[in-house]
Image (tube, rainbow, N blue to C red; front, side, top):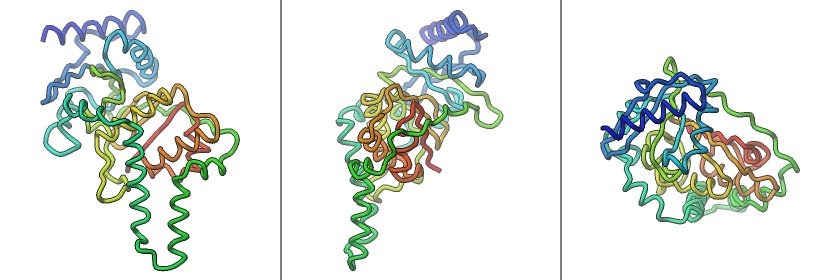
Length: 281
């Protein structure tokens, strides 16, 4: 407990000193999940939340703590993590398992599941019209075909508005982790994807979120900014710019979150932006 208190004091003191925010040591809430994942956090005004997150994000190498924003307090997140099933009981063991596969392999597996779900509607194909429909689905997930349909320049997606959930404040929360991509394994209920439309034989699990976010972190510098149940916001340091790069990212985003719209729409929109938003509702 002494260690937790010392971390809380450091978080509050550094935030006061370097960001000018009036955070007292006693404002920092500490919670520990059933598996031992420790969360520290304090409420922050929406106007200052992004700046505070960026400052602490840039000090991850020194602190070992990953910051993220949520409408839930640490104690609420620990409460949400209770119970059984794949979307509860996050742990260091789950994270260790999620980090074993190559991220690109998991992304390819999800893409294959999505295509299988599309095609199985028509298998076995009854006529030429069905075969043509299958061919169109295959092109939908072909980055080269998507690239041919994209405009020269992507639209600019504005930064997401940061607001708390209902009447509750926005919280800046810290978890010890190798990177923000690890959060869905440590706290699976951060991101809920009830309507992911992959093949029935393949769910979208917390370990898949880790792989996808790690893949985008390594390739594009994507970082986990905010999660609010079925919505996820990422900040992207090196967004794809060429048609080919945007097409590849757009296909991956469509597979991950079909609610975004087809890859051409994504490729001409947020795929080339520094802000990526996903929702599963």
